[in-house]
Amino acid sequence: QVQLVESGGGLVQPGGSLRLSCAVSTNIFRLTVMGWYRQAPGKQRELVAHIAPGGSTNHVDSVKGRFTISRDNAKNTVYLQMNSLKPEDTAVYYCNRVPNSFASWGQGTQVTVSS
Image 1 (spheres, rainbow, N blue to C red):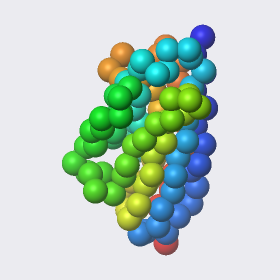
Image 2: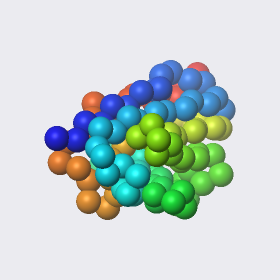
Image 3: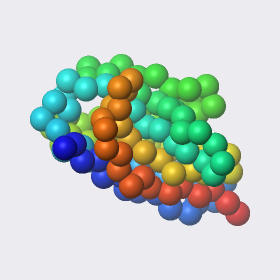
Image 4: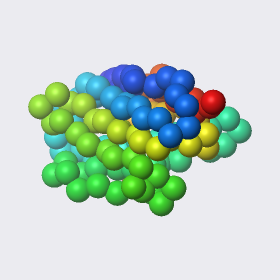
């Protein structure tokens, strides 16, 4: 069973930055499109960015220019650099495969943007 372990969240002021990491225990990581999702209270989980095995990326409009997804295939890890954070970015952030997620999800990492 694939394990996903997210880390790097925290409390940050508006305009601040955080870098999230997600370690993935699968031997097919280098062949897998990976994404970062987030779920805010009372809202559905949404995909905010994804990255192909070769490194091409896509970010939703609400985070474009502020967030950057990247990956290290040698470390089976995907990252999300988040800059210029806004209160509306507050959510639990998860990583998983795109588009067909692995059956299991990690515990997520809480990001709270507040003054």
